[in-house]
Length: 118
Image (cartoon, rainbow, N blue to C red; front, side, top):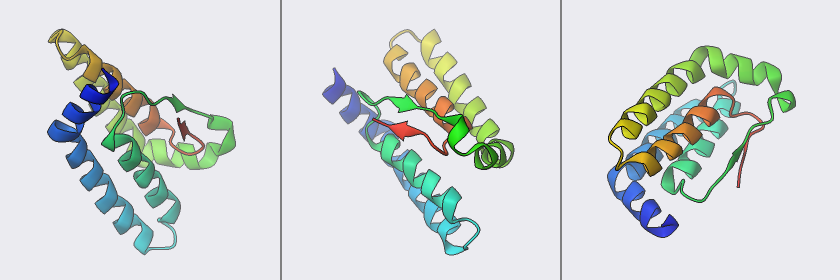
């Protein structure tokens, strides 16, 4: 299931998530101030390629100030988008596995600093 899920994910939305996050990471890394945020965008790109079978571990205490800045400026919009997209996938029943992956993205989008993707 993990291999099939990752292949379908990559074909239908993974390539777009990867591309958007890589471009955002490059743009953010152009400035010195944006480098930490650009590195977090690359973390999203890594998860966006193949999220099935991966686990997101959040450690807020590792970088609390950076996580708060991220949550205020970038995170809450992304988290709401992924959360509501996951709810819509749950309603369709057939897309429940995709909903679980979208909830991973919602969790990561709130506090990416110090998060580990295993």
